Each structure stands twice: as C-alpha cells, then as structure tokens.
Amino acid sequence: MIGERNSSILKDRELSFSKVSRASKKNIDTDGFVPLALELMQLRLLAITALLSVWSYSVSIGAEERVWTSRKGADVTAQLLRVEGGEAILITPLLKTVTLKIEDLSLVDRLYLVEYGGVDPSAVTKSEVGVPEKDARDMSKTFERVKEKFVLGTDDDLQYDMLKTEHFYVITQGKIRPMDVAEVAERLWRGMAFQHVNFREDWGARRKLIFLVEDKKAYAKLGDWYKAHLLTLEGEHMRDVAVRARMLWEESSSQTIYMPDPIVAKLNIFGTAKAFQIGDIKNSYTEVFGAFPTHSLSGTLLSEFIGGIADYAEDGAMALRIGHAYYKEIKLAGHTETSLLDAEVYDQDEIVKAKGFDDGTKWAKTLRELVRKGKVEPSLEKLLGWKEVKDLTPESIVLCYSFAYYLQSTPERLNSFANMIRRVQYDGAMPVPLELAKLYGFKTSKEFETDWTEFIKSQDFK
Image (cartoon, rainbow, N blue to C red; front, side):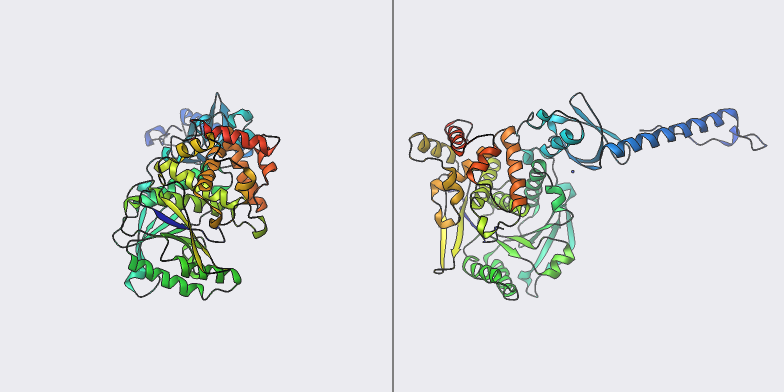
C-alpha cells in the first residue's frame, strides 16, 4: 500500500448590439426640431426594441435560465435559444449568444435538451464517458482567503485559517496549504453536477466545511472539542456517533463530524463537515487528486446527494458508497491508499479494519486473474447484502470497486447509473438485484452478473 490511510465509516453513511452614438448639437436645428435622418433612426430603434421584446418573450416561453456545463469549458448561465446542427445555441442574461456542441455538454444538459429542446434521445448516450473532473478548467483563481478566523475555542489549535470556494470552506490548522484539496473538492463537485440531475439544485447556496489539520496534537484537540459537542446532542443515534468518535478518532485519518447549529446557520453550511488528519504523510494533500482525499470527498459527495438510507433498506448502500469512492480514487489518482475503519459498538467495543489488495495500483489485474480462474465469482445478491466493514474481505472490497466501475463504464451505463442514483435518492433504498438488472436493460439478475463478469475479464476494466 502507498501511504495507507484509514477512512471511518459512520452509521448515518452519511446548471451584440452595435453602439448607437448620441445626436450631436449640429444635427438639431435652432427651432428644436429633429431632422428627418434622426427621426428615421428613432423609428428604427423602436422597431428593434419591439422585435427584441418579441424575441425575449419567445425565449422565455421556450426555456428557463439555467447553468450549462461543457466538458471543455467553464459553466455558463443562459437560456436555450435553439438547437441547430448538433449544437445548442444559448442566450445569456446580457444577450450574448453562446454556441456549445451537444456531445460536449454534461449528461444533465443533454437530458434537458431531449426533454425541452426536441433533441433525439440518442444524444444522451452519444458522448464519451470522459473524466469531467480532469477536463475542468483551473478553478483556483476563484478561491478567496477569508480574513476572519474560524474559531472553535480559545486554544490556538482550535483557531483555523479559512479558504472560501464556490461550494466549500477549507479550513486549516498548521502549515498545510489548502489550495490542492480545495481544487479537488470543486472538481469532484463538478463531476457530480455533470452527471446527476438535481445535484446542483439540491446543493443550493450552501457550502461544505473541510478541516485540514496538520499535526496529531491539533487533531486531538479537535477530537476533544467534537466529543464534548456530541455530549450536548440528544437521541440514540447521536449516542452511537459519540461512541464511534471516541473509539475511532485517534485511529482514523478522516472523520465526518456534526457541526453546531449556530455555526451552520452563520456560515450557511451543511450540518456535517469532513475532518482530515494530515500527519506525517502530506503527499495526498499537496497535489490535485491526491488519492486519500479524493476517495473520502467523492464518497462524501455521493452520500450527501442520496441522503440517508433507512436501516431496514441498507442492503447495497455500503457497496455503492465504498465502490464509488474507490472508483473515483483509482480513476483520478491512478492508485488507492485507503483502508476502511469501523467500530463494533453493540456486542463489544472493537475496531474493525478492512482493505483491498496490497498493491493499490493493480486491483483490476489481480481481480481479473481471480475471476478468470474461477476463484472469485461476482454475485449481485451477495454484494448488495454487505452491510458492515466486518463483512468485507480484500476480494469483496475490490468487487465493490469493479461494480462501481462497471456501472459507469459506458455512456449507456452511465445514464442508467444516474437513473439508479435518482431512484435511491427518492426511495431511500437501493434497488433489489432484479430491479437493478432491469435498470441496466437486463431481464434477470443473472444476465447482469454475466455482463459484469465479462467486463471484469476484459481489458476495459483497468
């Protein structure tokens, strides 16, 4: 493993006009009458204004103002004017026209064009899967350092520097620079908005808080503050969270923490934040798409989007979240350095650890060989039945990775994945094996498993 990190698993799982010069004095006679040329100009302006009013009215009827995302460019807020020859012609609030290739637009935009722009449904799957997180332009120029400190207590270790981005606050204790983690957070956010309907709208104007704490002493101080804060919260669930925090804080490199309501209201942030202990290994935090923060933040964004899964409907939720986080980590960083950590708090206080294959750069190759030899057999029912870290073996963790990879491996599958996530979001539960298979166009779960298995055996699985 390369710089192995532990990620804590908590029970809550947690879219021009030419300039007209003014008449000069010499164009007006001494009696104050407007010459014929100026009168004609005024008539033309009236006609243009009337035409623009009709044009604006027709645009407002046919489309809404929304954010459009191109794979090769920045976001643009505009209305759809028309579709023409494989391109979407947009009009911005400043009446500037923007032309974007439909094949370069996000899946969300292409679905919108099918529904409201009369585009053929095949446009949804006539695009590369791509890597929108890497395609995005440099976002660091929009980051803003906040002059005010973020304060949790009088101790210096509980006072943090703040960096504000469009969707996050990255707060730091120590000499660690926040720019790279801020960049990866925004790029992962853009990837979610690129592929999932309503992600942007559901997120709204709120920001997610990310702690980066350099040394163990300061991280321990944050843990002490958090454990004391948890004691002020009521409910059986929060008591469970408090026990887990007590057991896992010193062992893990990242934790999901519940923030006090006054801070949530003041900063307009989500109720939970992500805390990272940097420790002695800083490589993951000094480059964009460092493996561990990429894993942790991608899992957090997916969990935030789909919301809570009811206890009675948890089948498959862990496999989805874990698999997706490993998929993004390996896809973007090129390897994995993350192991899983959980606390067994009901029968006995016990810390449970699990990890995939030792070589974090060769998961696909190793699993492919095991599947080809018949030593590992992908089973949808078994995978969707894993609920606890203690249920996982190295083979099962890598199967979760292969599952998430398969679900998003082609344009058709990616569209099915987006549909599945919407269903999980609205139903609060993963689909059962047969329903999942049907979402992907198969009649039976066995057909799904056969296709998934062939994918693992192929060179497409990397």
